[in-house]
Image (cartoon, rainbow, N blue to C red):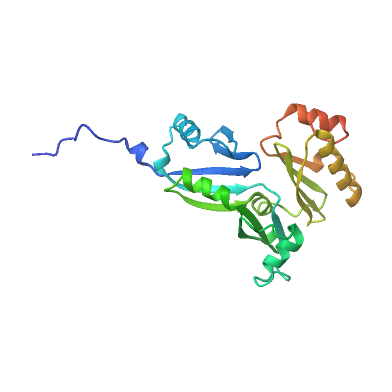
Length: 240
């Protein structure tokens, strides 16, 4: 007698498939990226609100096995390999970022071959606890946007300024003559502050910039109001 299909408590094969998620951590909160959907949850969001949104995307938290978490914050130090030493790392971090800055944070390391350096970046322990609480069954891997972008960077001869725009902060990467000249996260409250900062870069590095100089990325790069304001402040970017 042939086996008959079992009816009743069956789960579709698709529902059993392990799921991987990509999340960006910003000062404003957690940004989920699922296909073409993009959602930002403030840090005071409830576990239920995140769970319900994921269910709307047909994702059950219990099936999430892997999460790639990318930080976009300014607590990092890019240390050339010739000066990097595990013995002095904590001292370098405190000297660069401020005494006691490591308190309440975990230090992570990421190689940056383009700059022949290691990136040390800090993750607030409360952020990590929040993720573990919301995704208790998932393996979580942390990286930093700066290192990830530099891994994709080409050694441009002419100046290239990457602007990764977020809500009230921007990651700026300047490549000039095939060398990394500047990598910084700059907080801003208005387009005027951001434009002033960009003009200070132009003056400091004597850049004759054009529209081709700028590469705009990040969740706010399609913000037409922000782009229009920057154009009016003599930042050469295209209006969309």
